[in-house]
Image 1: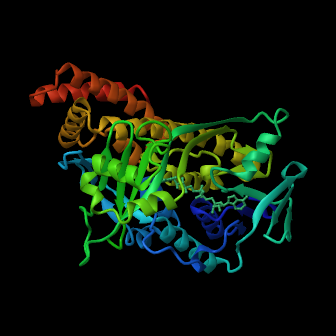
Image 2 (image 1 turned 90 degrees about the vertical axis):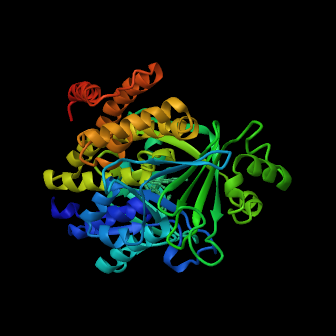
Image 3 (image 1 turned 135 degrees about the horizontal axis):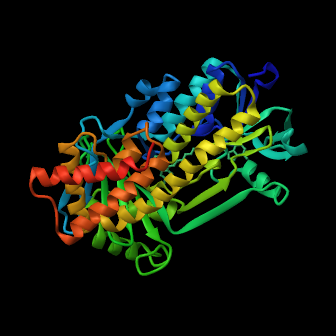
Length: 456
Ligand SMILES: Cc1cc2nc3c(=O)[nH]c(=O)nc-3n(C[C@H](O)[C@H](O)[C@H](O)COP(=O)(O)OP(=O)(O)OC[C@H]3O[C@@H](n4cnc5c(N)ncnc54)[C@H](O)[C@@H]3O)c2cc1C
């Protein structure tokens, strides 16, 4: 790429902004990162609060590109499946796959972000600027202004701006303001659900209070709770509830009502959650929404990446993984293009269908986790899929394609996976489940033929 185009400004020092900046620095670009918050490495973490994320192979592949996969995985906890908790206290283990090594990894958001910040500092001290907010974009993107809390401005002219400023992206809002001259498609879809984070402490003498190598899930029809293990042997639990209704946030407005609700639906977890009423009433209610937009770039200088381009709801555990995969795609395109405008167009074209696919898959998975994991037909389908995976290593369920096949695009995983799901659910509904090896082989052949038609 031309030398005068090697100055890149990244807006947002979150997970994706930092990985983008790190990779560009490793490739010799002159990168600066402007983050609106203070440096998280200098701010204390509130006791007992450890927010974690599920890291999976697409994200790991991008971390490997930057040489950080091993260091980060050593600080993560492998989860090999879901442990489903029924109201009566019984549990059922649903492995993610039968292939050894197919697991997802619970990792602290802070550990991940701090490691990336340290790696940037090590390559270019001074690249990171904190308490600096992207405030204005002018002159068709040629003039970009960041400001600190006192209103002191830092301005860039004719730089490349990579906007990794998250779901509420200021750069994306500016792009929207350029319509109708700029044909920018934009949609946001809010769920009628919000979430609260609660904490399950380690046992008093040490050790996990629940099984430590799984993702716990309490599906309750129109609401649910999940919990992911942390390296300090606590769990971060997330309670997803509708805003309205008998079991909605609006109805849980006193300690007493909350405790009755929790004891009714999550009795096995209740004795383990630390101060549920304190966390529930003090922690903010997170909201959930999907953002789709197109294109992901403006003119010759601005590119959206990560949640700024594709904010999705968290039910596939793929938002960050998709953002990290964006970085891998950007890196590949840097090998192919000599100029940013062509690269931006290619990036939008390649990544947009995948961003949309994982957004749609995440919405499907919300229904699956909330309603279907406890449904007998769905459970039969999971068992059938595990038999298929066991007998035929080439068979991948939709979940496995999305989560464990970074060689397959999200789009392709969605198309193939949905088609497989429809057929398998139909089989399980009608009760014509293969019993013999020959019948299972026939089903596998049919699935393979079906998928070969999709390409990819
Ligand atoms: C409850 C929940 C659970 C999740 N679980 C998972 C999971 O298990 N696995 C997974 O892969 N993903 C998960 N995600 C999604 C994941 O958190 C996001 O996809 C990921 O954080 C996106 O990274 P990002 O860097 O694009 O955006 P962000 O992490 O939002 O970072 C954006 C950064 O930009 C900064 N910023 C914003 N505006 C400006 C501005 N104007 N100027 C300068 N800086 C600015 C912000 O302060 C922030 O630091 C989850 C999300 C939620 C809500």
